[in-house]
Image (tube, rainbow, N blue to C red; front, top):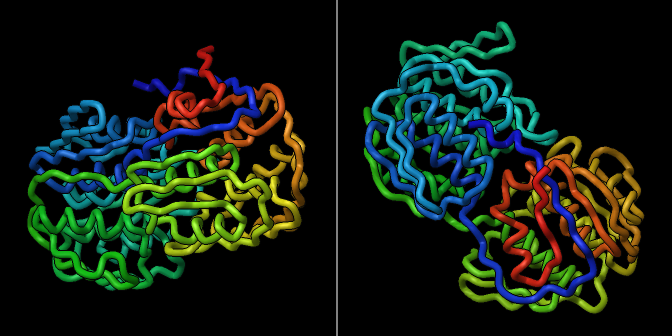
Length: 424
């Protein structure tokens, strides 16, 4: 079951101009939350456009461990949970996936109890979970910490008014999902606005939930007694869309990005255009052409609809090729800029001013070397760096990249990249 223990690495020869078409897969974060929400229902959910990535495999394994019947055929997942047979989340799997906390609410709602270790993932993934615990408590759960596990229990979940002191996407989704089966009304204030939230709420409403305001800062949930089954088609992954747009800017050629939602990456598109990158936009496509001379652009990450923190690392890489000085400010997560040391080892000139600010001097020539992926978004950034570096790059710990990007080497090969996966 724990196939993530198989070690492999990427070998990349840089300097190839890429061109052609690449298709965006379903949204990783939407998939994880939809699978978790399926545990609210005894009936079958069919989820389409599901990416074949490691994070999805992990959460499906966790759902099966809890009693779910899962059928997976390519990008379609059928999941039915007639009975949740245990209230403790699998330790090894939860330790690999921060999003495992999204399962706590449905298990708590249906069994009255849930136990789990501190959720893991990558370095960025190990973030505080007090917002979740406070929310569960407001909905009527008691929280106890013992033997390196959180245990939540309740006789009955009841609606509550929850104000998020800090905008949190997964926190908003977790409380929204949990409140669906709570008694009475729940109000979520200062809720996140990310497009995955209204997409999930719309589907839950089709299955019998009563959610209003998803996609705004105030969400109201009227509790219901049960949730039915249905079919859901996941929206495209906006972070993958943005990653491929930056890829086109770095390595193009002309790269056509298909099956995407340009409106979900508007802040990035504006920043790329400021950098001199030519972008043609259609309803579900972006055509990106590499710029002959990249201009420096200052960015500050922000919650949606602002510049996504997950797109900051590849954009910082792009700025290493800009003619001038760029300022990068990422106030959202601690440690997000630590990957810049690896880029510097490849030849970049980035000064880390403090944990949230960096100054990028460009342009610099990058050179291939042996490196390791520290986390998902830094990992894909290092892969893009290898594609423009002189010589050969070996990237270890590519499980972190596989967590969020489906068969990335095969898709890049179709654009002309010289990349191969080597199993150890």
